[in-house]
Image (cartoon, one colour):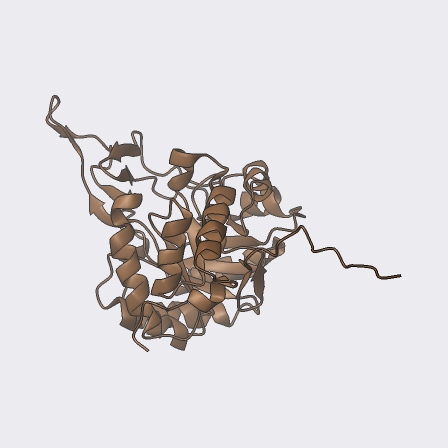
Length: 316
């Protein structure tokens, strides 16, 4: 009897999975630190919404109140924020997240005032079942941290990264800012210090919004970091420059709202994309929306694997 094989009704979708060192992601979307990362319940919600990985809000050694309100204002193309690293501190953070059991990888984010503090935080945060450590060297608006503590230079970046590297076998992600000059040199210094990936990056700035009726800056701290679609071209350029200088993966964070933004970032050299402010505009389902838009674009362009697009905008 002649039996015909039926054609499969299920078309194989393009591959969105990618890898950052030992961190295997089912898709390239990562929740950026500081957005819905205050507690485990919020991160679980984002994990269920389809993020490839989630990053907790950056933890400091001691609890921080942060800047006074108002700490956030919407401006053209995004937001200015001056949160000031408000968080519960490392010990409370460990209590909050130590029972994390979601299959979606959890990235622990730390921010310190100096090398010794980063070392202490890197050691302690491993009490949480994280899959990678993000060290933040790039805040543009909090005295004593990031750019305002001189941590944006190649020398400081390499030295801090080396100290953290000695304290963990987990992947180390160094978070940089598009505000940094010589961004390629700083990324190269992070790689030399033992970083496994670069997160490019943090908010841009600082910037200011003035209430012309009160003749006064709206933010209590006066200035804040810019996030949202307005900074995407600068982030893309920074990713492009970093890709030329390092061999480690890059996470493109800043202005990613759509799957087309994500593909643009990958073509600039990114392995994954961080999503933050986009949640405000498209809701927590933005992660699945980005993936669907990526798949649709890839299908229309006969691309079967997202990884084949990485760095495609660079000359051969």
